[in-house]
Length: 209
Image 1 (cartoon, one colour):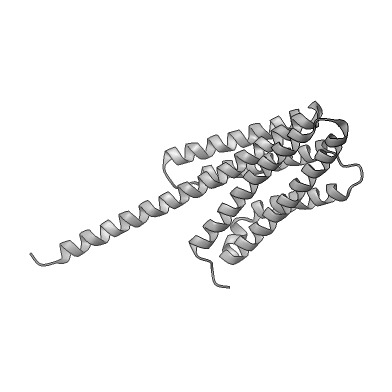
Image 2 (cartoon, rainbow, N blue to C red):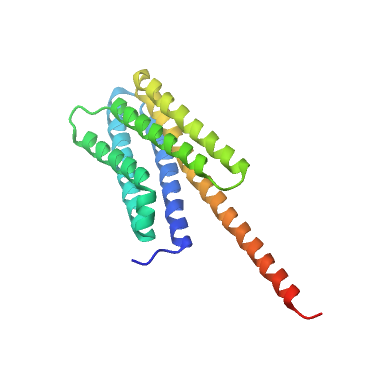
C-alpha cells in the first residue's frame, strides 16, 4: 500500500484535534443544561453517548491514518492504537451497559489520559528536535497525568463537576494535538529551508569564478 502524503496525515491530525475540541465544548454545553433532575439524567446519558461516539470515531481515524502510512507506522504506533481501540471498546460497552454512569465514563477517561500521558513521556524521551520542544513535550505529558488524577478525584464529586473536568481534558487534548501538529510542520519547514540553503551554497561554490 502506498504511503500517504504528509498533507493527508496532517489533515487527519487536524480532524482528530478538532473532534476533541468539539467534544469538550459539547460536554460543557450538556453540563450547562443539567439544571434539574430530569435534565441531569438526559444530559448525563447524552454526554456518555457523545464520549463513546467520539472515542470510536478517533479510534477508527487512528487506524485509517496508521494503515495509510504503511506497516512501519502501525508497528511504531501500536501502543497508541491499542489504547485508543481499548478505550473505544470500553466506551461502547458502557453505552449498552444498563447501570453505566457518568462516573464510569470519568474513570475510563482517567485511565485513557494516564496511558496517553505515559506515551507522551516516551515521545519526549525519544524526541530529536530542540530542547525547548522536548521540554514542552514533558510539560504536556505532566499536564495529561495531572488531568488523569483530576478525573479520578472528580468521579465522586457529582456528575456536573465530573463533566466539567472531562470537558476540560478534551479541550486540552484537542489543543495539544493541534499544537503538536504545528511544531511538526514548523520543524519540517525549517528543515526544508535549511536544505534549500545548503543546495544553493553548493551550487554557488561549484560555479566557476
